[in-house]
Image 1 (tube, rainbow, N blue to C red):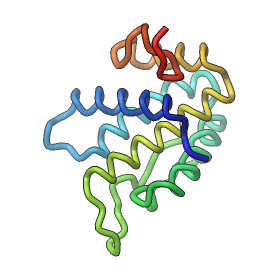
Image 2 (image 1 turned 90 degrees about the horizontal axis):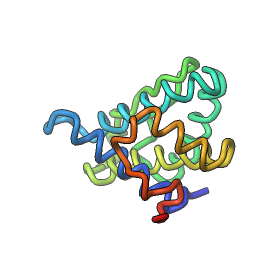
Image 3 (image 1 turned 60 degrees about the vertical axis):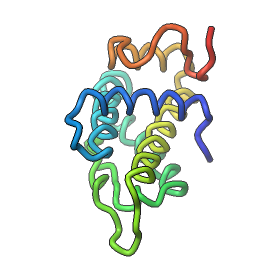
Image 4 (image 1 turned 90 degrees about the vertical axis):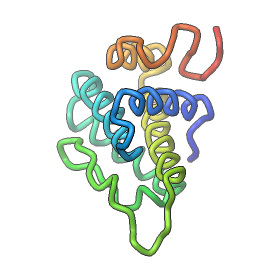
Length: 146
């Protein structure tokens, strides 16, 4: 299952925002981890640790089929994302592919969240996590202008 284009756009905006808030020399995986951790903190309160683990594990399984750079990544029982920066040595993966993997994973996570709780609650949870900083009121969960 491929994430909807609107979810990829939203994931890209969140990763771009977080990449801009980090150090310029940081690998793209750090922005993905920051987005993931903000989502985790916001969703843990809403769905609990076990609920978030289930959602994140499913999203990662979906994303791995599309992004080989996620091969070593896993979600621990407490919901922590591990192994994101580890890349299989037999593959030559550039930064664009690693960044695409992060977008694909976050888009899958957002897409599953949208399926389970709907657009309005998904946007509310995102606004709570980012306080409206990473996206504006004109953009919906579908990536459309209102």
